[in-house]
Amino acid sequence: KPLKASEIRKQFLDFFASKNHEIVPSAPLVPIDDATLLWINCGMAPLKKYFDGREIPKNPRIANSQKSIRTNDIENVGRTARHHTFFEMLGNFSIGDYFKEESIAWAWEFLTDVMKMDKERLSVTIHPEDDEAFTIWNQVIGIPEDRIIRLSENFWDIGEGPCGPNTEIFYDRGERFGCNEPGCKAGCDCDRYLEIWNLVFSQYNHNPDGSYTPLPKKNIDTGMGLERMASVLQDVDTNYETDLLFPIIEQASQLAGKQYKVKKEYDVAFNVIADHARTVTFAVSEGVLPSNEGRGYVIRRLLRRAVRFGKVLGLEDAFLFKLAPVVANIMEDYYPELQNNLDFVQKVIRTEEERFHETLNDGLVILQNMLNDYKQQNINEINGQAAFKLYDTYGFPVDLTEDLAEESGFTVDKEGFEKYMNEQRERARNARQDESSMQVQGGEIAEFKEPSEFVGYDNLEAEARII
Ligand code: ATP
Ligand code: MG
Ligand code: MG
Ligand code: MG
Image (tube, rainbow, N blue to C red):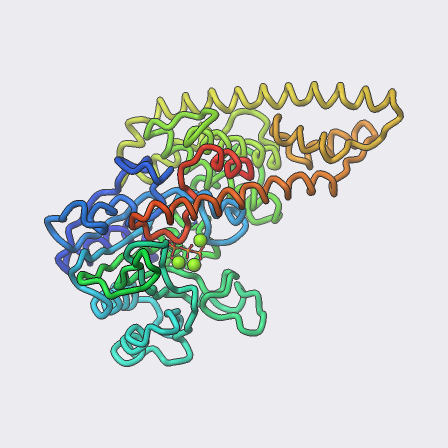
């Protein structure tokens, strides 16, 4: 009988408790005392104070299951098998205590002994110069050389401060999931080799003059995706079919009167809705309300995005608030507060959904007036800028604009629309780059490969717009 996700979480924490780790509860998604982060985006983020030496933990070994939000993966969400905006990261941490050998050996023991994963399907990536990691994987663990792949990007470095190589563990889900390109192996972007666990070895200090010197006290920071683990252990095709997400899809499917796994376009919509339902439910439960700035803006965009994908499924009335109880049920053993806050959460979501429907209706009026004007001027195409404005201001997906236009005998300049969309994506991307350089200037340790959540409301606006 496959393991439930809640059992995987529990066994992970029990395993590291048996290795003398202090088990700490998930910190809130909204960072406490950390102005550099919009959301907690990995298990280490709430433990930064220990990694940068501001505080000494009573036990240098810590493990957690941390709820996390990442918006940088948004374009993959619903399309790949493995990306979410909300997910849980299981992690074990050593603050100047154990190092590479133990962390690798325990990761292997957990995956193969406790979770009983097939050893033959596991492969790893390491940093090209990390011979130490190579020797441990190859000699101590016994992974053959051809399943230890050297990748130069396996180095966590955010500028000044602690940094170091990392090693990632991949599960081969089989050819059927692969891109089938020559050279498809661990590290490939397709869904065949699923990255399940990242172990970061912070062993150097990146000095202000650019040199690297060994740290006197070396740290371990690991992160494993609970949803990905569940997809492997429950032997399902995507994270969305695990017990963490599937009940949400079933409920949406019932509300829409449409089946899952019949049409690709519908599946993406179901996946996006299930993903965003979790993010919005958790964030609102923590008191983040939809608004026009900061975290509230991210939540507003995600909620609107879910509503728009709902339209793909023919969901025309408020529905997202009906998924919140399903999320609360799935999560109640580890996050019982969701049940307690459910009335509030549903009210907030429902109000926001209804308000968005009004916005959409306003957009319909704008569109109708526009078409009337065009008719008088003998124009029969909605230009890219107008289509983009309908999207950007009124939340009209271009397909919806197209459908409505077509009904009145109009076409839409989709190429022009794409041009505006690309410009917007470009702005968001640049904003992200600014963010990472800001983080480097911050100089404080923050071992995130994904610096995209740095606070900066101008940037955030740009980022949230691509949502
Ligand atoms: P990927 O390459 O698949 O985008 P990543 O390298 O960005 O993942 P890490 O930053 O190393 O991910 O995070 C540690 C672990 O957390 C990953 O190995 C994965 O299991 C999980 N994880 C990361 N991002 C996501 C996400 N967006 N959705 C679900 N799980 C994730
Ligand atoms: Mg990623
Ligand atoms: Mg990766
Ligand atoms: Mg990784």
